[in-house]
Image (tube, rainbow over all chains, first blue to last red; front, side, top):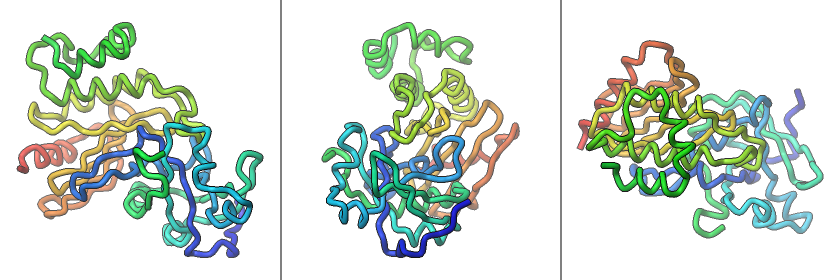
Length: 129
Length: 153
């Protein structure tokens, strides 16, 4: 298990791609939002992949770069602080295709995933990707 | 006579996959006067069965026929004719989740198998207490949630 990286501040935004099949209408709020299942650890893994917004920007990247190869995806954002309040640890995990790739590691209960889903802010919303 | 949604699903995705899904289901797709939810759920699931591996860009598994059958089976046991249709979403592990966010109710049920269902239920009018648990075999609680969802105007 890796350690939480405190150089990633609580206010830092973490971007997560959301495929169109994981966007649900919420008639209670009148909005389209990611399903809670969009904030799940990768199948068989302990962590969920995100991209660190500031690191992406620092290296000249833009939010649209993250979905360029995924035409059916939108982009949502949650803060590192929100994930930490649900017992997650956050650390950089640079990969070849995304220098800002970051892991949010920890057990994601249904309540935790629902909170991420409800608190998520669209960076590239549906119908604009 | 098939509903419009069902006809659309058949024309879009072809009959072969559809017939495969229909095998062993507790109702016939050719029954007259299908409840709205049945045809809508069919249509949604047919679309999700077309997803390729890695459909979420993070390595998600393909949705299996057995996951589709399990969802139909559970819904058929719980839904009333006039229950509003859920939104069906795929999960990265290759199973399906049904969701309702309407009538001041949030209900999510991930059908892990015919008899194991992960449920989140929240009634913002507080008629039924919040539920967040994995139900096994006894789906009475979930049935009560669906009845409330159906009856609330």
